[in-house]
Amino acid sequence: MAAGRTAPGRLAPLAEEDTLSLGERAYRRLRESIVQGRLPAGRKISERSIAGELGISAQPVREALRRLEQDGMVVTLPRRGTVVAEMGPAQLGELGRIRAALEGVACALAAERMDAESLAAIAAVLKRMKSGTDAADHDTIDEANEEFHALIHRATGNLFLIRSLASLRAYDNLGRHRAVGSTPRDLPKALVEHRGIVAALKKRDPALAEARMRHHILRSLVTNGVLPAPERKPRRP
Amino acid sequence: MAAGRTAPGRLAPLAEEDTLSLGERAYRRLRESIVQGRLPAGRKISERSIAGELGISAQPVREALRRLEQDGMVVTLPRRGTVVAEMGPAQLGELGRIRAALEGVACALAAERMDAESLAAIAAVLKRMKSGTDAADHDTIDEANEEFHALIHRATGNLFLIRSLASLRAYDNLGRHRAVGSTPRDLPKALVEHRGIVAALKKRDPALAEARMRHHILRSLVTNGVLPAPERKPRRP
DNA sequence: GGCTGCCAACTGCTATGGCAGTTGTCCATG
DNA sequence: CATGGACAACTGCCATAGCAGTTGGCAGCC
Image 1 (tube, rainbow over the protein chains, first blue to last red):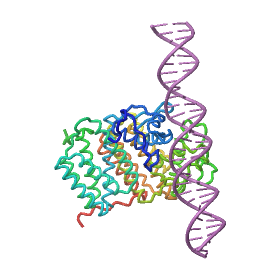
Image 2: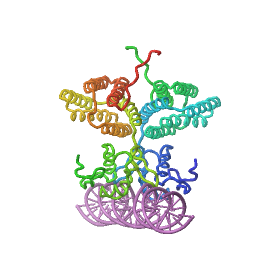
Image 3: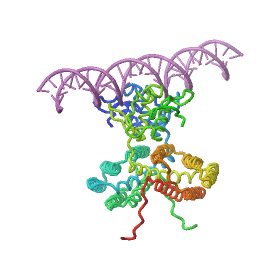
Image 4: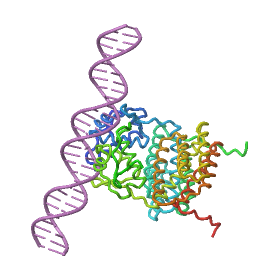
């Protein structure tokens, strides 16, 4: 990590060279720290202490905390303090189901309006996924996967969707980071699912694209242990 | 409106008696003003001028604007200004589809965990809807409708879902306010749909509840003119 | 007349200081 | 030893002031 030699749970001062506002940078830093588990649930966050660690004033930190609160990542009790929100497995599962639905809608919108350039790009990503899967190279798979979904999100052109999904994918990362050790993934299954999604996008079939994407997300959540395995449909017991 | 005699587009000062933070109150005020169309799209919003109108400092206003920006209701260009976001009919339609999906997930979650008390409450709301529909009383219908969905949202116990849907329903209101005059509504159809949703909730059938809720939202968006009528499925043209 | 350059009036952004409410600690009291 | 109360050290919250970048207009020049 770029954090370097910092005490666990502490943040390195912000670099000066950046062009973003301090509030924005503080928001991203805090968000990243929470997602990566460096700021665990229940940890107290005070505006002043964070400001001190980041080497900035308390005001931008306060803005960042308000935004994180709207994301649901922290909760603040007036005049008492702000703490990182608790995220039980049940709530993580709910967020996963929400994300599945939103990714589905995004995929449907993308199927309607994705241009040829983006389609070519996503086909290229698919190839990288294939080679990465063959080599069992998790880094390139993760990277390609990230780009895969990002391309679809961007194709929707819908800011609300993009933001919401970014927030939800952050929780997904949290779920992964929580499970120490190997995170199980059914790579070949994911590959064929991705191919099916791209095929639906190329056919410009919104309903099919949505169904496939949603199923893909839900299945991956199940194999990751975030969601329980769905019960088999009983044919009248 | 409680706004009273204020110049169009201007905001009345905040009351003192409230217990909420100034930032929170400013957020709600601005949000309400945007939703009701009092602050039309493209209108410039400066921290200082709003602060002056509300009789508070610029800092809480700034927080409110950052939160509204995360909601997608305003966009701010650094060092240049903040304006109310443009919302074309296309984007409004997209948000409607997103909302339909999220309301569906919320309804599924509610079907799994709604307690008897809430089920009784929602049954009562249904009765009010029935009488309101018979009397063609739009006010009580709107009120009951609001409560209907709020009960379902609350039953999920998911803050992210509740917040997102609140934001999306705000846009829905904006769509209504935009269409001056009579907003078409198929009241009897809505009533039977609501009944079907409640039936699914009582049966604790998440999939059915989700499908019915989603269809209900999508249909209402179509009759409101937010979404185009879906094309009939061609059986191979 | 049309163009350039400057200046004033904005804008968002951040730091500082201080207020009011909360919490924890330590001492005096029963 | 246990209990209650005051004080200090927090907390979030807000107002003020000032910085730096942007914009609009007006004078001066070509």
